[in-house]
Image (cartoon, rainbow, N blue to C red; front, side):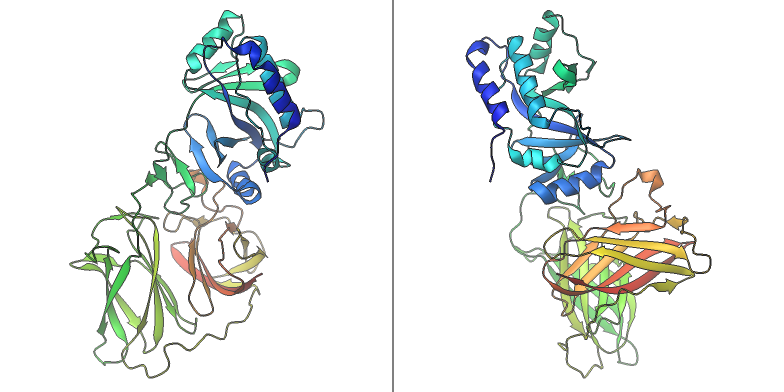
Length: 443
């Protein structure tokens, strides 16, 4: 339930009558918070207060809650200061300061939701008000001998009473037009890069009702036992016409996971475009498999579509459930010891932290190479293969530093329901891709 910070509302109501001659209406727009890790703060804020992760051109990254924002900026020392005024106190000081200069701030509730979103995440850097005519507001302040400390085309920053910083921002509430293919809740009105995975945002397509479909053709091996080639065609959910245009995600147009029904077989492959869709040579023994396709149609939303197949020569049940047990023991592959720590709660962001050390010396692995544009890939499936999640690391550094130099890869998948999930984490080192299996329980 949203509640009002009393001091802010009382001050806003008190100044309303004296500010009728303001050149433009100002409304509370955002809190700007200094944190050590803006991407992590975005995720925490969404978990605490809900909302949508956004990028505001010229202002920063953060979360949108209703028509208010909490934006985050990187700071080396972002611990909240015991002597610094609270967000509510800074809001009240900003409204008083504006009123004293003939500017009217709309009496809007600074809700406890926004305050909760930034609690213990960092320190409030400034309070921001938005207006469609920011130039007129700044001009009014300059006529009163108040000059901004910093000014851009999008905003102007002022130092006011008690150390509070006030920003006058040009109203940026344009419709979301771009999103991240991997994190669709990261949105922007303008082209930008995702602060979580560094991918370029792509245009948001018009909504398409229904589910895309996979048509799969198997080419048997010469022996007649097993499959030697797969042909996969994507069908539009409304017209059933073949989909021929796709948006590249993580350096490929089409990611295909081949998972055995008993969860013992795993492949992450990338079919090439053919005459009627995508094609790839495979070596599948007789058995039951589930194909999990990850793609983005150029005129559609990100898709993760599954299709069960049975390869020639298989005589068992195609629905036999896997005997899946929790397995979080360290694994060693290619001279690297991989450890898993973290937690998973169904319906919420999990924290899965994979640490990599040299199996002989114990030293952290610092020479991982980007694999398909990321420091790692993760597939998680439940025991009956009704849910699949293709995850990518929560990247915390710029593009040029995305090699997990500290020997750590962090994922934050949302596992849809309680139960045991099989995980396959992939990373690349010295030109070789390694795949490491685990199994965890989501509570």
